[in-house]
Length: 617
Ligand code: ADP
Image (cartoon, rainbow, N blue to C red):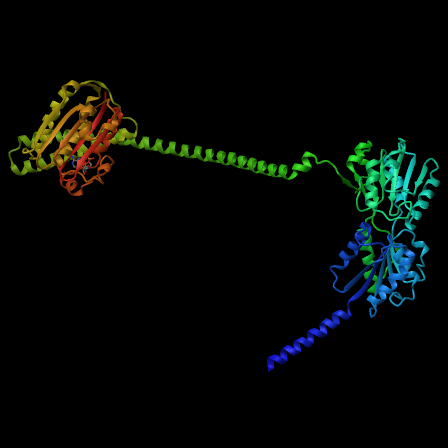
């Protein structure tokens, strides 16, 4: 129940508002002299409607007198009864009358119930001065006599002309223009005016073709009625004139150039808008400063015709429109060119940024190189220092090692000889560490030199065999045998015997250290012989392979690649048991590379290992 009451109340309020809105709506009667479809009329109508289309408070009723097809004096007879029937209860706030027939009808029937005391706005009137401007509530827009303005422009653009063919009709407007043209020419007696006011569509082509004087122009004022007073299509007529003329055609006929060279135009649309503005002001009671208003004018010229008659386009009035101008490359491709320029600009910018970035990068690189050089330098100094120190340590250590060995042999007191044994073992260990450190520091300081000479590997391996056996003996591992497996065809090689020996002794020392049962095999052969067993095929064929094979603890696969790295002792249990600094294999690797070769390892956890060195042949 409550809801129903609410909706009823809402409806009443709505109605009140809409009644109020309607009561505020202004009604306009807009009467055209001509008919819909006639381009001038359509343009004025468009101007009027475009102004009011955004204003809800105006309601425009548009009517047409059809004055070109019905004689204006007949209009009263049919038009007024027609209005009376259609708008019998209406009351208009204002009337807009477009062109003379409409204005005449309204003013001549001042007491007609729809017109009585209703303000009137006119447009398209070339002779407003003949109307009772001061006696009637009358305002409007004058259809300006364009010939007056155009005459100066024609002289400016086409200074050689002295004769004008003035094409006009015999309508009221036509005769107004005709007399004003005559007035203009009277003021300029050097010019001749030929008025042509009886023109037929069928013959106009041959007529204008007969105008051949070089100093003549045509001024097409507009022809709505032919010589017999019959209406015709003004636009079609204009086109026919322009297409057939041999001399320049100027015109002040708006809407379209219809092939004319150009002229000053005042568009019907602008007339309509101005009229509508005046109508709005009048109904709202706003002040209107003058009775008669002049619509804006615009120059419109055809580029191809300007060129045809050698007229410089720079001479046309400022702000004029130029039609049919061929597109220049710039106007046609402007967007493309601008787009490309922007892209090129961006590319250039990126290049500049890249160059600057590179410059800063190379600056940073230079700084980095300097810093690295410094680091290398200090590293070299450190290395040299270490090498010196190690060297200095070696001499006294060697003495300790040598003499403790001697003392050990001479001593009878078992207690003492035990002490001397400890001194000997530790000084030996120390000597080895110092030797390793010396080598490492020489390698790091790029100071390790190799001297390649003809070397007899057979002799070298015989000595290695002996050293392996005595090492096993010292370690109490006599049960482990050492085998020699050499290929005497390759015994001669150019290398640094001392360094090769050092590498092999490292390998042998480790084999002894990490083997408890089985045997150790040392030897050498051509790579092609061992390639399959030791998976060496990828090294090629120009190497000799020296190897030490043991049946020791082996290395698990994940540690195998690490054993040649510095300070890597992969089995801490054995290391603690056997001692070791994790330097030996790394020294071997570096020495092998200095000799132009490489080291490798193949190992299986729990089964044994093969350590080898490839020497270039
Ligand atoms: P270390 O002085 O510790 O022996 P190396 O550089 O000579 O130093 O050896 C590095 C590591 O490689 C050793 O600690 C050991 O774990 C492993 N290794 C070297 N040779 C063998 C081998 N023949 N059998 C098993 N493991 C080995």
